[in-house]
Structures are given as structure tokens and as C-alpha cells.
Length: 269
Ligand code: ATP
Image (cartoon, rainbow, N blue to C red):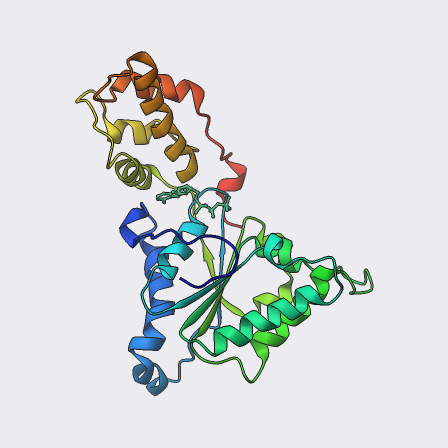
């Protein structure tokens, strides 16, 4: 896979627990313009230019994008702070323009901004001169998304934990026109995630994933991943020849792995 920055491990939609609604919205935004172009045109619908995903950390925003990137035909570009910042003035903007240029010449393409709030920043009202790298990147991105050359077939996806740090100019129609809240997993979703994370783990009958899902309020997908790993490690530590992970290992793991989501971060903005 072509791309800039992070590696793109194969991710299938069913590697992601819960989030049926979110998955469906993303798939449609991405597949409809390709599969149902004429039907959309008939009803005067434009394909979305951008989707902004927001929600608490560790709840699979990046993983959702990886599932998009795993789709066969698309060319995937990923931009994060580390891949774009340069000590040389003007370099970051130039890189960004080049990425869009490449994306336009290899449609269908996705340009993904991880932690988009940290990359393009927010203009202060009546504040600074508009000359920080972030502010210049913001104008470049707005230009690229508005530009007449912005080809259909280029979808921009942004992910953030801090939607309050996103410049409102980016939220106007024609830019990020779909704002998607990626919620923390509820009990059902947690059960789904636990099932996925233990697919390759032999479990004893004493492990009750439904019950475990109920006991893990406030756990993000990433926390649940840690929990399963910790339980397996405890089983090994107890007996290096262990063949199964049992309920007690999970109980003990629960005393070690703490939920990272507080009530406050669990509400949509
Ligand atoms: P951040 O904002 O911190 O970047 P994120 O929302 O992008 O977080 P991911 O990086 O996608 O979260 O997820 C972190 C880890 O948690 C991944 O390794 C993924 O396997 C796991 N994970 C999170 N949510 C889910 C889920 N719904 N189903 C399966 N795995 C999940």
C-alpha cells in the first residue's frame, strides 16, 4: 500500500466491535460515490469531501480508517504531525499540497489526518498574525478542500479527541461535511470487542465475556485490548505451560488495568 507516515495493517470491518452505525456511515460515504454515482447525481447529491471523526481516545477512530484503507482499490495517504513538520519554512505546506496532488491523480483516494487538531490548529479570534505553521497549514488545507481541482474521488478524513480545537472554517459544508461522533463502547460493544480480542486466545469455561463486558464500564477498546493481554500474561506467569486463560486471570487483570474514560469524556461535544 502506498502511504505517507504510519503503517497500514490489514484491518477488516469485523475486526471492529460495536459501532455499527458509524461503520455504515463511513462505508456509505466512501462506497456510494463509487458504486452509485448516477443515483446520487439524479437526486442532486454531492459526494462528501470530508468526514471528521471525534470522540474519546482509544475508541477506534484510527482503526476505522485502517478498515477503509484496507479496501482494495483506494490509494491511502496518512498525515500526522511528525510526517509533515519540517524545520524549513514553507516545507510543511508544500508537502501537504503535494499529497493532495498525488491523491487527485490516483483516485479513489483517502487523505487521512490523524489528530487533525494538532496539525492544522485553530485561528485565535483577533489573535496572532496567522503565521504559525499550523495556521499556514490550515489555510493550505482549506484551499485544497475548496479548490476547483479537488477531484471527486478524494475523501479527506480527520480524527480528533478535541473537536473544540478544530477551526470552525473546517466544519462548513464542502469541507468536513460529515461530523461523526465515535462513542465509547457500551456493554454490547464491549462484549463484541472482547470477543474479537480473544479470538485467538483459548479460554476456559470460567471466562464469561458477557459478564466481563458489564464489569468494564469506562473501558475503551484499547483498555479492553490491554485487559485481554494482561489476563493471558498472568496465565503464563502462573504456569509457563498454560493452555488456557481462566476467569480468575481476568479478575486479577481487572485489578491491574484501569478504565481510561471518565464520565466527562464520554459525552458527545
Ligand atoms: P486515539 O485517539 O488515541 O488515536 P483512536 O480512537 O484512534 O485513539 P485506535 O487507535 O483506533 O483508537 O484504537 C486503539 C486500539 O484499541 C487499537 O489497537 C484497537 O485494536 C483497539 N480498539 C479500540 N476500539 C476498538 C473496537 N471498537 N474494536 C476493536 N478494537 C478496538
